[in-house]
Amino acid sequence: MTAPWRTGHGTRHRTVPRSPARWLAGRCWSGAVRSAAVASTAIAVHTAVNARLLRVPPPARPVRERVTVVLPVRDEARSLPRCLSALLGSRWVPDLEILVYDDGSTDGTGEILARWAARDNRIVALRGAEPPAGWLGKPHACARAAAAATGTVLVFVDADVTVAPDGVARTVLLLRDAGLDLVSPYPRQEAAGVAERLIQPLLQWSWLALLPLRLAERSARPSLSAAGGQLLAVDVAAYRRAGGHEGVRDQVIEDVALLRRLKRAGGRGVVVDGTDLAVNRMYSGWSQLRDGYAKSLAVAGGSTLGSVGQIGMLAWLFVVPAVAALGGSGPGAVGYLAGVAGRVLAARRTGGRSWPDAAAHPASVSLLGYLTAVSWWRRRRGTARWKGRPVTRCP
Image 1 (spheres, rainbow, N blue to C red):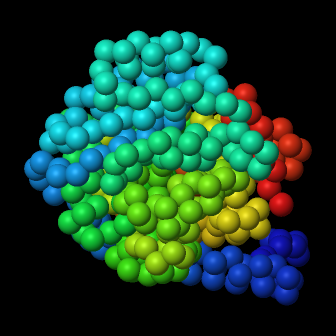
Image 2: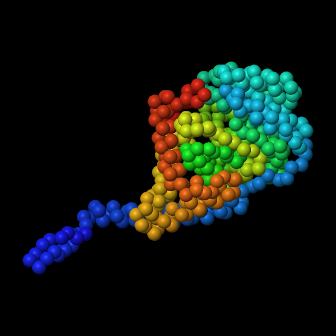
Image 3: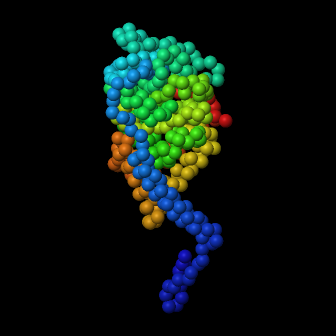
């Protein structure tokens, strides 16, 4: 640093040394940027490898066993007709039952369900009561419906999912052909509006970028688990051995918790490609998206501390390089572009938008951090709710 001072011969400059604290801060920042650039580049390479290794469903052929679709619903009057219409249009599954558990709906869902069940005997309408103490709503609904199932495979589907005509068949065939106990085909995600387009692509990107898929498939380690309850198939015997949804009765992220219990019981399962099997729009608009993620992000890392650590890591990997790149840092630009490349790879592999959405990856991570903070705050105050019910407070 230089400072001007005047003499009789004009203005000269003298060198003022930086303070040790500023020097150290600069070194730490530079190191953080460089290491993040290296790590984000490695993650982009890993994403490309995972994109090639991701299991895909086989071509459709007849399924030679009884399949039970479990559909828990609560206030799904708008989504239910489309979901049921798609399920009833399932091909290659001659022995199919569809158990729909109405979890105390108040928007006319029950009446719609009764009309559909009267038209097709493959639909079985189940009426639910309030979950007992210690249970959350969705695990209770899934457990009650699964108890009534008569199939050898359970296929759990959310009401906002539209399954392709061969989606159920190919999901079951993949489960059996791969010799797995659970598969979670991730549907293609629909997103409209800025908030949805920033956040929703992170769902598939997260496990494609950060989870070693083939290792996770073979490993018994519960930490190497990713699943989505939007579409999930499990062998009935393995489901019972793992304790079913009764074993995850108080878990907000019950799908991942179920896979972890299954692994502890000696089973194997993994997330797989569901791009051609189903399409899903989880949330419509900012308010619904915020409230949906507020119920779960605080414990997405296993605990509040784990979630904070995850967000901190993502910020270091993908926000710090972008900030440095704005200041002209070469390593920062490399790190930013690596993050964008990873997002493009994930989008192309899973049927999402590549451009310009991927370029906003640092903004996506930042918004995810904000939603995690909202989730933590609501759960600490006991105000986290979903569809009119409170969500259990985190520790």
